[in-house]
Length: 234
Image 1 (cartoon, rainbow, N blue to C red):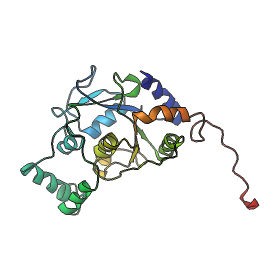
Image 2: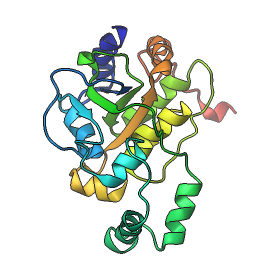
Image 3: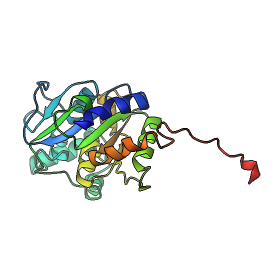
Image 4: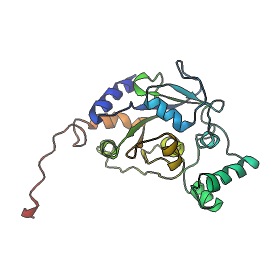
């Protein structure tokens, strides 16, 4: 379970307030999870605080989130009308149903039919290998993570910063295998009472060995950076 060893390394390096979170699509639930109904964004915050949550269509408390995470099909008929009305005239996150349609058409699809459970837990307690490591952090910490993740290859992440928090934090990196940086959707920022400097970084697990390898070698990790040259010479 090498992923458990990554958690204290990241926490110590970055000075995180919460813990890194393991996110995994699973065929069966894991033991020791909290009971109750949770919106996906709420479950993420609970996991950052140390909780284990098995999210499924039966206990996920946000209809839109259930769809974005692929736990249920996209709402149809009257449910679809209610969703669009809520987004346009309720949350006021889109100016029109056309704007909402455009956003959905130009972003990645949900991971429909992947697995019945979405397990979120502290990385150092994860029973199964994560699909993603999700970190709640500030901009400087995010900068270091992105730099560490791209240090060995130089390949920049292709971020997607539109849609719901659960789409940006979970669905997009699951579907594409890309690291993502999410500012979260504004409704979720308010409902979960995030600090103004909070954001999420989602790291596909296949990137984690390289990221950890980079820490002692990269200036964004623990490598000593050389003094910046005197620009007047140039």
